[in-house]
Length: 334
Image (cartoon, rainbow, N blue to C red):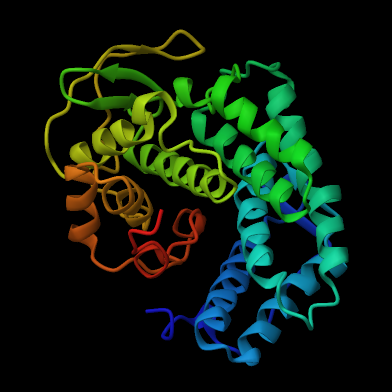
């Protein structure tokens, strides 16, 4: 799948722009697609280099990263600009984390500056102010916080800024917004080992996005020696099982959820039920292969959709996660 991807071709040409627009044509024409496609390419090319050792892929990956660090100055739009700063921020930082060991990458310092000066300030601004709704920011669904926390954590790791990394980690564990794990996965059913997700009453496309971003946060923290997978008695596993089970067509328990505007969600949403995202292997690998825990529905979802690639479709939702979990997370190494 990786070899066949157009984004893993050593001849890939980047399309960086000085200003990324997401959310409102009145601010300028939406152009954020060039960023999510290039982020996918930088990551896939980096993986292909690590596997093959062929420097052509390394050169292609850093060409993408350098193009953006040379040109990008800001990200604008409606509040949707914070989705761009979060999702594409964590993706670019993860690609760069792979490429930092490439000795020919002389542009690495400049790239780190871009992440610190363009992406991180937006991540911090959103998490602390929530676009004017305050620190708690319960107006915004969980995925908004989770995306910006993922970017913040990835940037902290990439730039060796422990303060930034710790800012994200602390918020995940005890923050007031919907991205804090106990708010994102807010109701545990102790009898069934499931946890209801904050966006389950909205639609399943966003519920699965929550699981995708939670998995990214857990894996990055794990690589730094912090165990978010085990947080609050394996809360993430319970949420993964809940979302996977429902999207496989099974019934799950439901508890009424009241949104920040007072709307009472009386039932789980069937909208986008069965959503496909390449996210399940990362979670299954850790809980089952590393920790030896059962993850029945996560495994069933993983098996149903087969080997995980990346770039599922042409729209932004298909690029919200980097993918290739079947290739990258398939071992019992602790």
